[in-house]
Length: 193
Image (cartoon, rainbow, N blue to C red; front, side, top):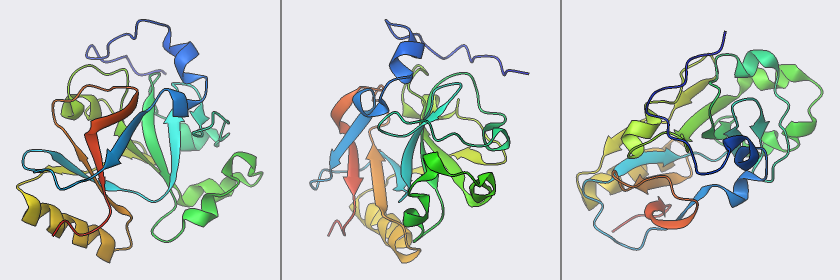
């Protein structure tokens, strides 16, 4: 049974099957480094230290476009539309993901999670897009909060770093999904003070 496509999903001006079956690196949104901007009102999410993955609607691809070839049970319940995700093995376990597209032992996938951080074909701002991300046994949208200022951002960053995380991603709440390097998605890896 295939889930219905949400009405909020918009069509790109070219067929998504062509866009998302190629190397995601050329079709994804890339952030820039945080440079002290006022983060008040921006969306705060954790930057997970895993491997990028794009669910195309039928395949899970690496940044370079290789198929991860996950077991069917790992992708069960994922929708027929694209999702940008992080394949996450846990804090301090990024190296355990190396070679994942070549894994023969499908049981290795049992300890992994797919954390959705954007839905490229969904219309609207980031909060609207992330609401179309599924929750399954192995996948879920990234948790987020609205930033109240630099002190709040620094507290969120400290909490992420204290649990072994990589950093924070700040997203401008009204930014559309835009392919390429953007100023509306900022990576924060060090103290903002």
